[in-house]
Image 1 (cartoon, rainbow, N blue to C red):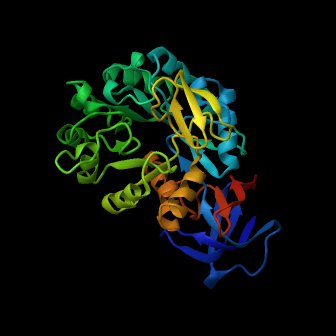
Image 2: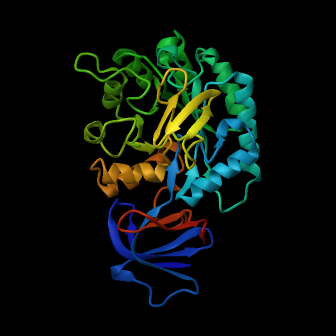
Image 3: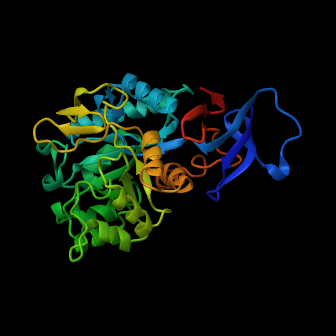
Length: 384
């Protein structure tokens, strides 16, 4: 297949007029104006000047179209993956909620089975699992069920890794909740990425956790102490620890546009990861849904707990979040694309196969028109 007449998002984070030749499920050649192919291949897509970007990668979301990853069925994962691919998110790492340990083990086992069995090219690739609980803080539980919160525990973590057959890529903790947090991080950091999640940690505690080996921050600003001039908290610690990659939700609900702009300037675009944090109401009409066993009311983009009005994830997919960050928040398109493709691929440890339009990588490519509306999705070299 040849995708011609497109603005190719190159690995140096620039758009260049060119074309992309695919061979099977891999990218064969990336052409620019200086080395365009002499003739069309048998199957050719004329992009008509569209942006050609890598398929997006969402490494923190819960569900969509009425399904949740924590429903714990292969059918639910399949439907989630099919919807995500259809809107240009071609690889995923869904997030778990704070549930009983045994229930989480079952969810992870099902995901591992799904990963082994799935061969459907119309579905987003399941690259990993992002465990948002249960090692979090009751003080910053957000939409998590406090009854299932436990201190971080190496043995329990090992059970999660075993149940998922290594599919768990991130394990979230609130380091202030356990005197053993630093030992926990040192014990597991070479097996799984440790993130700070739903935490009330102060600057010193968060920085100590990062220095011990934690390298990820779950939805920056949300479910953590505010960033202030005398108490910089987790956000300040993330800034000072340059190896840490923070997630950020840019749905227009969770974080003010000015804060988003300031954060990209402060942290540097090379570290920022766009996520959706979407829940099962995404792609569905307004109404009442559930998240982690708790009732959630959804009106437009806003999802809140019925019990106390706390924001409960988002109802916006990652592609729409990327559009929002460009159109409404003033982040350059090149930066936004990198933060939804390259950076999550690097954080997941899969950049050799995913995250850029590069020879030899997976042929997961999305075409967007000048208004960033979806024109085509190519998954594993096949147009969906």
